Image 1 (cartoon, chains in turn blue, red):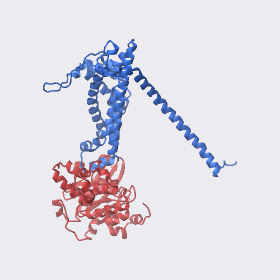
Image 2 (tube, chains in turn green, orange):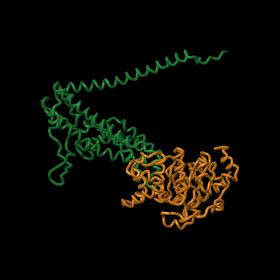
Image 3 (tube, chains in turn purple, blue):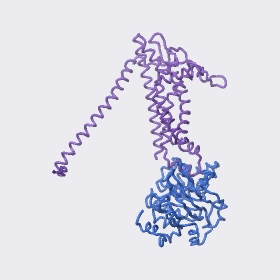
Image 4 (cartoon, chains in turn blue, brown):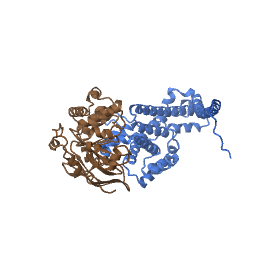
Length: 312
Length: 288
């Protein structure tokens, strides 16, 4: 039985072989670019459709007016203020809690089956449908703690929703601090907390902030859990201002005020029969998308800045 | 092969090959301790990673203000042994020390369960295999150990940072850029910065874990020269895979193999006239 011969090494054969393999290489470039353009193109079409539909509503009045029964006079003032305040509550609760939980899991927790179960569950929580968080918040914050259908309820609900994102991003960021740096600090006689506060945390700030902003940009578009807790769609007043002119000059009553947010306002307008409201919805959608893109841009910039100052 | 082939007595008899000098010491009480007296002594030291026994019944004396080198093939346990001295293994779960490392003149056991590793690390510094400066300024790198001890007086910090950088032969290169990031230094400079960082807290023993394995020959020569000078201030224990380096910088050499201490003695004797076959084979390059 003759053994198959190895391909010959003469010039013609080698060149023919390389040429045919490079064709397949090029083929993949074409397929990859097609896939990429399919994504980008649909996003681009969506965004430009929103911008075109809402083009006549990009005015200062739209941003500074309350909703109205007449589409031409309706605006998103209550919605964007509500969104901003809810995000503020979300950031102020999800970030400290999430970062501390991540530090504990990563730096302190012993590696055993119990922390293993917690880890898996934290990761899985990121996949829980948002409406489930809405139901939880309705039972817990609205009825049990009696916080009402307020900004604080919404903020806490969305904080629960993005907590897994913050925890996972923070842990990944903490983990990227090399063992050698920890050993250097421990070697000088630092305690665990000193190593964390002086080194691990400062060096992973970039990643933590990125995780926070990605979490918030998910939260800002959430509608379902807020509808579940009973956010209003029609609000013709602003929450109590947080700054007052009498001592102590700060007020927290806005926390318990009713609110609406951008996506709920959009949902409300989309569901109306009058086509004029459709362009309101489109304009609000474009603005919301713009806010999200801006947040992502900030996240990318922060990551870039920290990468530049710290490369291991 | 469970017998310990060498003891502290061996190194004691080989001592005194050089007239003791007056130490230029920064720290009061240590000037009184004569050079070559025992600074630390491992006694029946074993170390376990889980069920694996990485060090087997090691007995070794580390003489005061001398350079002791640990040599041996990869995986022989020399780094593991070194890391026992500042309890670095405590950072890894499931590890266990048996036996003792006596620390003099206080005479307590460094690896005892009731001795806090933080206390040990405050007195025994370490320089690692790869330069690992903090991504902070040069000044803050050196000052960190002092800050941990609660020193916040600016003038005192500046004085101590300068002294440490001088001891590490980095002052001339760094004095004009103390606020620059430590990561802007070259590899060799970074390693000298790590030495300065460890020296700033005036450790009594300085551990070196293959400090030049990531450096080029010129940077290596500078570090070796530095180690030779440091023996006037501090007791040095150095792990090296480079036998020429051990021969150049150390006063005593200990040869380890498979987690055991095979032989220890005067460096010149170990390299010219080893008493154990295994040491001779290693030194002549038959394995390793």
